[in-house]
Amino acid sequence: MNLMEMANQFRQNPMALLQQRYSIPANLNNPNDIIQHLLNTSQVSQAQVNNAMQMRNNPNIQNLFR
Image (cartoon, rainbow, N blue to C red):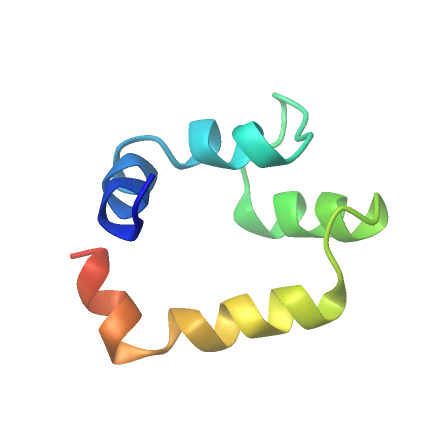
């Protein structure tokens, strides 16, 4: 799957894309709760979360999700 396909899928159904890679309980729907769950279960590291937050603020990445 290329980056544009992933961006389109993420726009349509973010949870489906996330659940392909991570184990996320169905009752979690708040982004902060999901991040905390992933950190608590060691599915992601704090460094990965920090990198994702930096990418979120990148104008080039923001353009993909518009």
